[in-house]
Image (cartoon, rainbow, N blue to C red; front, side):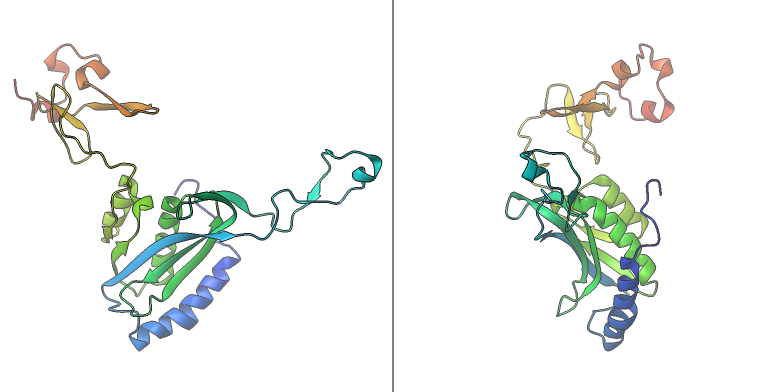
Length: 241
């Protein structure tokens, strides 16, 4: 995996302790649910830091009348970052605590805990978390993955299907759009949300245009094709003239 996080981390010791001494015992007691078709839920929560993002001055510049010096400062929480608290709709300074819980358990027992930078999005943390959960618990058969709209993206769906896990993720409110009338020349949308022209060929994704959204162009225009002889076979199969 490109740009993957290092395999060894100090927190991995805690995760191994939680897995072997707590979760494995809970599975044997039967309080996690059916371990052969386990349902898990993943979500991140803001972990506010008590430290100041300004840091503390350790120099004596203030005694000499210099109040805006650039001298190094002491930070009591150097790993803290700024992040967005979507529940309270405000920025916060600290970390993100991402956890995976056994949703079939009557006690909602956590099976995985991880602290990450507050600036890291939950959709990124979910991928790393589920990958590590599968490594920590090779004997658990995860069947369902439950998450919120932050994980509503195609790469997450494709990864879950690759792992034979059924994702239960609501559509992100920002991506919902009610189409009462399709634009001229568009007959429908395919399973990837691409417009389909009257010839049955999907439009090409041509990047993002802020604030309108994704731009689509005709396949022939995008690839500078004027003669149908140059059209790929897989597109010709669905072409109706």
